[in-house]
Length: 64
Image (tube, rainbow, N blue to C red; front, side, top):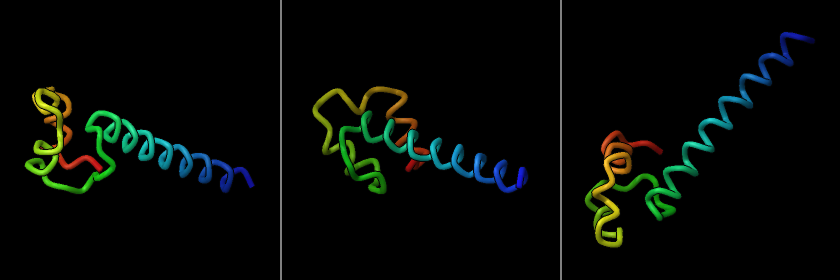
């Protein structure tokens, strides 16, 4: 039983990390569309937002 519990805990932790990463990207980019190329994202941003290095890096790495 302990093995199953540990496996479930790891699975939940992994899911939680993915979800929070997605939410952070969504909040940073100000868009609900994760899987669009950086040119589209840049076009949707109010001027200046896309110059933020962390946002730019996330977009270029294709974080979803």
